[in-house]
Image 1 (tube, helix red, strand yellow):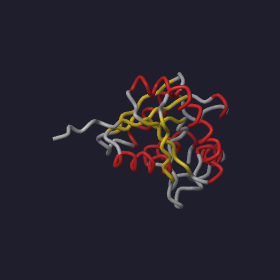
Image 2: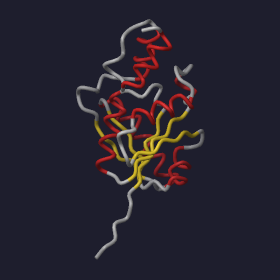
Image 3: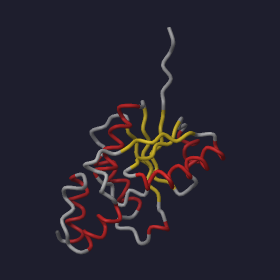
Length: 164
C-alpha cells in the first residue's frame, strides 16, 4: 500500500484587504491540497497599505478559521525562499482575467527558474472576477460599502476604521 504524501501549497499575496475572491481561491485550494499556507506580504509597489501586516494576518486567520488545513503567516523575503521554508510543493495564484495571466505567468516562470517550484493557477468565479483589493481600499476610503465583497471580519474592521 502506498503511503500518502502531504501536498503543501503556498498562496502569497498582499491581501490588503483579503476579499471574497481571495477567500474563494483559498477555499478551493483547501479542497485540492492537504496543506495550504497563506502568506501576507508588504508590497511597496502598491502604495500605502490599508492594514499593516499584523492586521492582515489576523484578518486572514479570522476569515479562514473554518478551514482546518489552512495556515496563515507573513513574510518579507522572496516568495521562493518562503516556499522552501514551508516545504511548499507548489505556489498557487488566483486569476481573475486574462490580463492577470500575463504578469502571473511571467512571475511563475521566474520562480520556477530560480527555485524549481511550479505555480498552479486557480481561476476565480465570474462572481468575484471584478473584485480587487485596490478598488476595495478606494471605495472604503471614500465611505462606500464594501461589505458584499469581503469576508465578515474584514467588513467589520473596515467599518470601524472608516465609519461605514
